[in-house]
Image 1 (cartoon, helix red, strand yellow):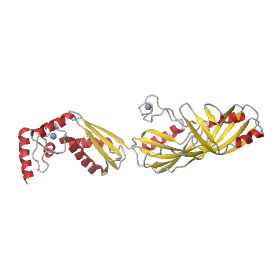
Image 2 (cartoon, protein in one colour):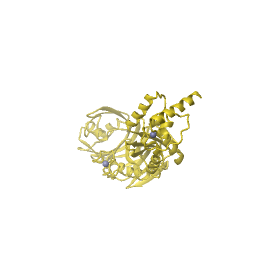
Image 3 (cartoon, helix red, strand yellow):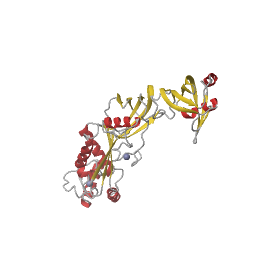
Image 4 (cartoon, protein in one colour):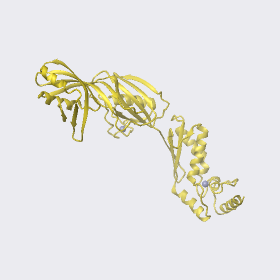
Length: 378
Ligand SMILES: [Zn+2]
Ligand SMILES: [Zn+2]
């Protein structure tokens, strides 16, 4: 009771000294009913911002409702520092402590109203949509909304040669997404990355898809078996009620995708690849050359590039002679096996086929027959 009486006294003091709106009074005297506040606009603390709460809320609604699909949200706000300063001035004068500040009250009220109208859920940790409002000194409101990225795991089959795996970034934004690239972050859609990115953008109406590939191949390689696995994330999707599993074919690329609940890929994703390599050497190959090469099934190949050294195991190796100086070799190896280095082109690999044959050998083409992920990552 004493508390209520104290608050009633405080109410009279506040009213006598300052012109405050209903919200700014209520914040300091939560136990007392505040009525008959006619002049909301000239509130000493908020200059009418709190009285505009329904207008602010309708601005939020018009910015996000029908524009984004979401089941949960979070609303945050930035308000001018002068508002806190004026509030602190009053609190210091009347020794008011432990009350919520103007911003906390604003976002609490906004969240309450937004929740009631949209019938969605307030989520502090992983909201589907994060809404930030920015209010300036003249109480102009800017609404910025961003949705949580969507994540996918997929595989693709490539049955025709001549499409490269990766797309170069948009030169204007370096992949961030801009008007030039229509917020894809890409230079176009004529690669596997581009084809999948375009589809994901059209399904989700999102931006800047990012890919993590489980290995890579050449423009002239084909990819068979179960297909090459990859992970994709798309930022700021407008549609998030996307099917859990879907499949599409474009330009000879067959893509299957499924939704993933998170972005966890695993720091070192282990995989095994079956590769068929077509090799040409400068000299004619003998039967004993072929026999010599067979020995390397089960061996470890050490690779050395400018930046690092690593080794990959060959689990099995099969050779098919095509003509006097050409043959096909099918290997099952650890993922990340450097085909061209193993043939003896480019940088260093030990052993490599050019050294084994003591002849200059080249990789004419290589095809991915299958890719298996070893670690369970979901
Ligand atoms: Zn006020
Ligand atoms: Zn761009």
